[in-house]
Image (tube, rainbow, N blue to C red; front, side, top):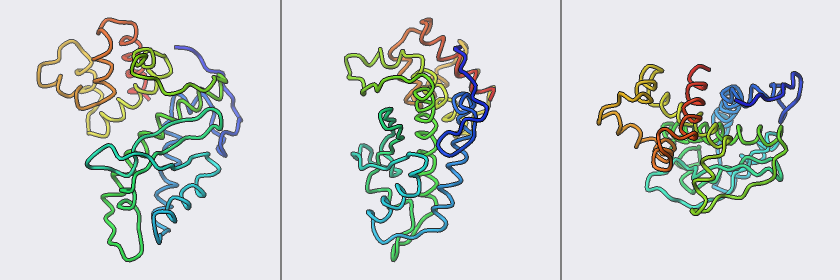
Length: 233
């Protein structure tokens, strides 16, 4: 794995976390912002959707995180459609849907904390994935890469930086579903039975790699390498 230069005292987005730690250990940064949005939830009540989005964008302006209206793709929605990162302005983007109103407290509307927890799970997953891309971009000064089309989808998923980010997301999905390291290693082994293979299909990123690449390909070997790396962190 490529070694990243270590910046011991570099201030990144208001936090003095070493850049290398934010690439290899995005949990630290994710945990900081998770606590921040929980605090936001506990202290605020809103009049309408615009009030909520304006408040979120103001609250995360230092971290350069922005909520932008997206398209609703799922029947059951946490309020976050997807995430993205724009190297041109160094912003992490959360594309929200109107279902985000279910996650926060509005005047004269009954609030269910379970909806906020659902929102929070997606917030953490997208934040971790896009944080890796932001840190890679800052250090490597990469140019802005537009979203890949279906024709070069395989090229997109074969890039080492994408493999690293998706590997972290795969491990987090396993953990979120209560799976320990022994279970993950069993799924990664060649000893999977038909029932356990179904697990792969429940993790979109994992399924995507299995559909696009041969199990003995360099891409899959690198994906496994990063998965094992993040399991040990």
